[in-house]
Image 1 (cartoon, rainbow, N blue to C red):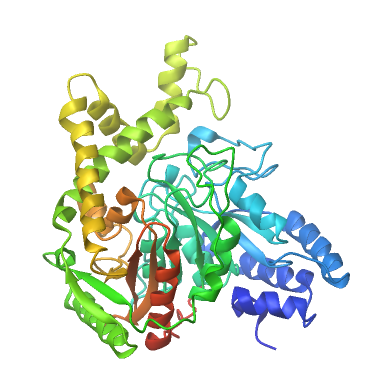
Image 2 (cartoon, helix red, strand yellow):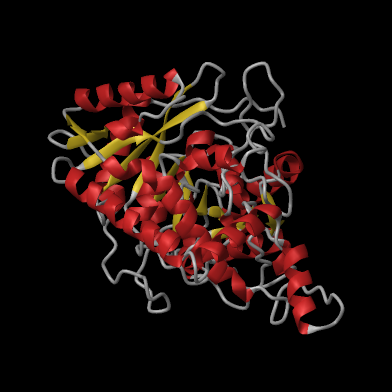
Length: 492
């Protein structure tokens, strides 16, 4: 039998239902692998071994009785952004201390309701602020990928670096993640995995630690497109506890994955060619276009003229919302507290100064500045107007096409410390991904090739609002054509 940890989620679910192995066996296989690998990869910040085995036993009883949900007995990893009842949830920030929620996020509850098993909580950038997972209080995870002939420790991307590492290194069947400006799609592209951000409002944000409320959206990281569709179907739901939740039925996206793209019109936005982009990214993009043409799709050139303003607009809107959301962390009600000189003001100041990391502090200062009385109109209001223009660009483009094909990232994964000196250089990693968040559109990253140094490269498909089906169709076609089977060489 194949090593149980190397199965795809869909194959594992089928194997469990066919009683080829038990949930306890596959869960134990993952726990053993995590124990061996996590000291080197740092993907998990909490391992819930006892809880996982109890959940696996319950799943085995359900499977024996011929009952069970769509993920019955399947072991998953959960990003440390999702509240999990009785399990520490810190968003990888010191300010939350040992915070242990008494309630469950809607997304994780949906997974447990379908029989999934929780292996533990996964590493991430502090409060999901980062493009390299360098800002976690627990230290960065290491990508299982390495450049050929090099021992340089590479990023798995951010902010969902722990989720990407765990899926890529076979430390879970699939993982939850979140995407505010590319935090699902960029790690997916860096690690040869599949990640989708659904339309804003598809997945409930209840129980997700907030970063930027009008941009945050939950989604999965998985080993292939079908697994991503299966995870997303279960993660998404209407939720009365989230006022931005869409009260719409969740389609059967798994049925879209194998469908033909014949007759579809695929838009190629000219603005996604940026200065300094490696030839390999352009070549991969052209290869993706050729694959879709060969599958019967029509290629259409489109323009998204306000794309160049997307990154600056994002880095005004996101920090502004963060400064509002993170005001609740004051050391008084929950989380870590530093008393200072004992006064209330000193407690606030000392708690925040020691609790928030440098990148979070930087964004909070930017956000507070752009919301301040003298600058609100000049920055925040103007950024929101730009955001409207970006959405209008997409709406015009989608009059000519059914989906857009772009690169997922401007480069392959980079080494830790290679881009950390200038924050703007780090922010530029989100250049291809932030537009979908600003416009609230679904977008998926799918592995499509390998660069000259043996690292994965991904393509991105952006769909119309509520048209995840098109994303899955096109991503499925790219996956079939690319036949991406590369695996990281085991060094850990």
